[in-house]
Length: 171
Image (cartoon, rainbow, N blue to C red):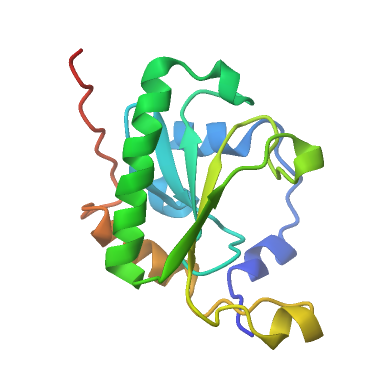
């Protein structure tokens, strides 16, 4: 098992920052460092730092909202465009055979960041769940975050770590 990205987390001696990590990532504009792959008008696509599988992405609204009922019409419409763009990029870059798409609303439902709504897109391959989770309580991730970031960054059409916003649609 190889998980080099965990070393920085485990060795971190700095105190935990307060506030929402997604809001901070979206504000900082340090996309490569924060694993932000794509920015649309109302959402961003972020590579999950603690993935369930290779290429595990999250779609995060730019606004700090915790529930679907807080989304406006434009955010809801754009979400599906960003979801499909992300799915196509994952298909192109990683060739998965399927996907899990879902969200956890509130901490009791498993949301790691309960105050900021987000969706998970997890690419799946036949046989990607083997004996390791059952016997060793461990999931094997076969690609580094840096490698996954570069491959997906290219698949989403970005050439640099600087974001491009998609144009707003005229109604």
